[in-house]
Length: 470
Image 1 (cartoon, rainbow, N blue to C red):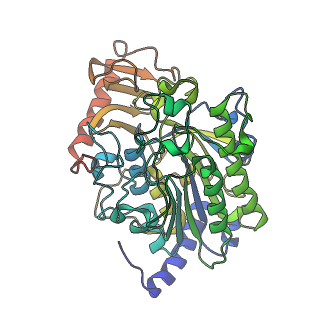
Image 2 (cartoon, helix red, strand yellow; image 1 turned 90 degrees about the vertical axis):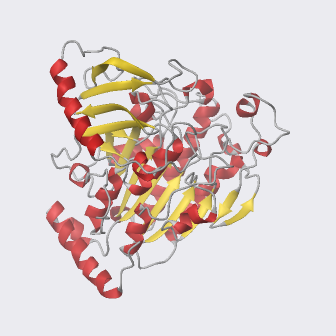
């Protein structure tokens, strides 16, 4: 981690003004007294079709719908993995999971008995921004290692409040067996710790209050007096099973318990945007709302919807990795717009660096593209390819509208249950066929050849790190 001295910080302050003026060419951006604040709201297992502004017929999300009307919907924005741990590592580092070792072909995520985590040699989004003069906070689910050396406060965050791994882990012996504990949950069934910095403050965490308490912690951080810009990473536990919501949201949604949970997350976003407006910070705060992977379809009514997209969590079909994403920044991001440009959670690192003048790491390979021209309404296509990994296996590649599947595996509980090679590879045109139903490999062998050349180049530069999940 680089430590900036005072002179470097002064130079950095001038650098961000110069960069912003070049990128925008607009005087409105120079009215800001400091670089923009950033808030990333990262949901857990939210489906592409779970929000009103992404087409859900009964889940009501008025705050997110308003956020979309005031900002930009990203229609082709991806998580970098199809399950929790590797996806979160990619967001934090701007690197595909095999490069950091935060994936596995066996143990898919970190568990309460895991010994590994995100290595200290990785440079996180929080470290990059803290070195550029930001105050930083992580609120919510971490899932990148629960031992002290792996917690958020060891990875660039000034403070942490949340749970260190998934809310369905560490089930107690007295809990019902099988799916009963998931579908008829109680907080006491899961010995999940609630932490503040490195200390456990409640165990088991009262999961009915998590969304509310995360929101309260986020609002306190946003309103804390400071002359520094801030970065808030708000990683909601919900709507990952077991589903919990506050008493105020019981019976709130026609969609049942799952809808109640999503509508409380919507309420949380509304609280944050309201406070930004009330405190005069809205025009200097960029908010990104997205999710870590697709919906957990095998959880039946306790899982979400991928809409038109195929499959869900655990797969590299579109439903497993394409996420409902909204970016909001009044007076900067054009209101009531949408984009079909490709984007990925790994791109936030390069994007935030471009918007602030923060220094990207130069001693490692990044899988991060600057999306700021698209965000700010300029015609641009910074990202052309998307690489879909499941563990260390490259499963599929997208180039423009075309996607090739080299290997497939079903979501949890769906076929094929084993990794299956596609011989020949399967080819889909995602703009015409977002549901990936019509294999066009026989009609377009030239596209397969073109993308195979991209794969060869990509794999020649992929140096996987040892798995930290085993």
